[in-house]
Image 1 (cartoon, rainbow, N blue to C red):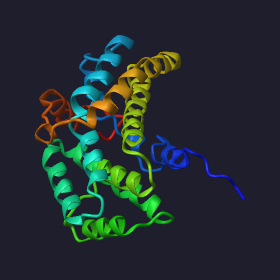
Image 2 (tube, rainbow, N blue to C red; image 1 turned 135 degrees about the vertical axis):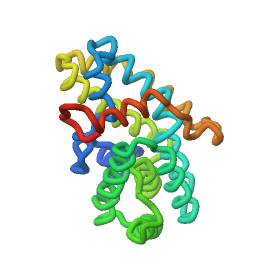
Image 3 (cartoon, rainbow, N blue to C red; image 1 turned 120 degrees about the vertical axis):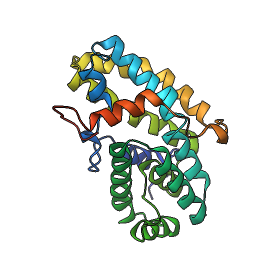
Length: 231
């Protein structure tokens, strides 16, 4: 009989946070394309500043906190729908809101085929009935809880996924060398661990903290003369 690993959730965690999942994440720059075209991000140093600030001042108080709240919702579909509606209201840029919804629905579809649960099924019904959008961060938190992944590990993986996506886009857009991108990922590892710890303690009243410059750059992205990315 196969012996179960002490970290039996690890394979599920790696699968859930895999940046190559076929959900379309690679086509979204989260506003980075605007920052590059406006010459705000133009080097390894400015790319590192952008990614670090995005994680610390945007993701921490928005999507990562919603991952935590969805994880803690347990089996309360009403609470999950309320979180989804709040998340929609906070995502002012249209492209960012639509990207979050598309990624979330596709993520749910992948795991529901083999790892269905009553809460995931209920959330899916609410999405089909247009009562919820199905945001990616909420789907991520819901699925992590369902797969038995500890909350701290869930948050660390979510931050890693976000950082990997931003760095990959920076390598293509700035552009940076492949080793520059890997150096950024290595340098950010202590930040990711600290952010996972900090997100466990984010005050509920601070969830949704506004990042005006980020929102403006994302809105400007909709009207860039030329674009490689959808957001």
